[in-house]
Length: 116
Length: 104
Image (cartoon, rainbow over all chains, first blue to last red; front, side, top):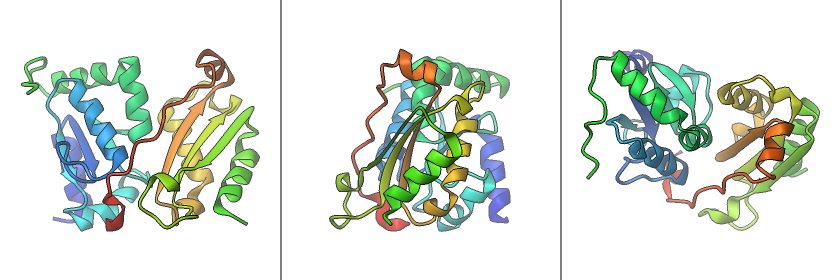
C-alpha cells in the first residue's frame, strides 16, 4: 500500500492515534513523551505509530496534513496538533472530551480502560 | 545572522506581536555547544483572536517554513493579548531531551 494510504487508513481506523518518536512506554523525544502522557492521562485506549521504526511514514507524514513537526495527534480523523496543543487541550479538559466523543462515534466503549 | 534573530524578525513582521519571546533551548539537548537546533517561541498577538490553536500554530509554522527545514524542534505558544494577561505571562516549560533526535 502507498505510504499516504497507509497513513490515511491509520488515521481513519483509529479514533485516537499519535505518530511519535518511540512508544508511549518508551518515548524517545520529550515532546512525544509529553503528548503520549497527556493521552494516557485521559484514561482511554489509543493507537500509536513509532515513526523511528517506520522511515517511510517519518518522511511523508509532514505532507499528509501539512504539519512540519512530530509528534502529530489525530482525533476522529483530524489532526488536532502537536505536543503544545495537545497539552493545552489536556489542561483545559477539551482533550478528554474530544477523545470520548471520537470513541463513542466509532462505537467503542469509554471509561473502561485499564490504567495499569 | 543567527537563526534566532531570523526567527525573531519574521515573527515580528508577520504578527506585530504585543509580546514576543524566542528562546534557544538547544542547550537542553544532546547537540554541540552553541547549536541552534531547538527553539521555543511565545507570540502574543491580536492576529490570534477568534482562531483555534491549530490555526494559530499553522500560521507560525508557515511564517517559519524555511527555518523549520533546518531546526530540529519548535515549541509554540500562541496567545491573544487577553489570554496572556489572564495567564500572567506564564507558558509551559519545554520537555527534557530523551535522545531521539539522531534519527531525523
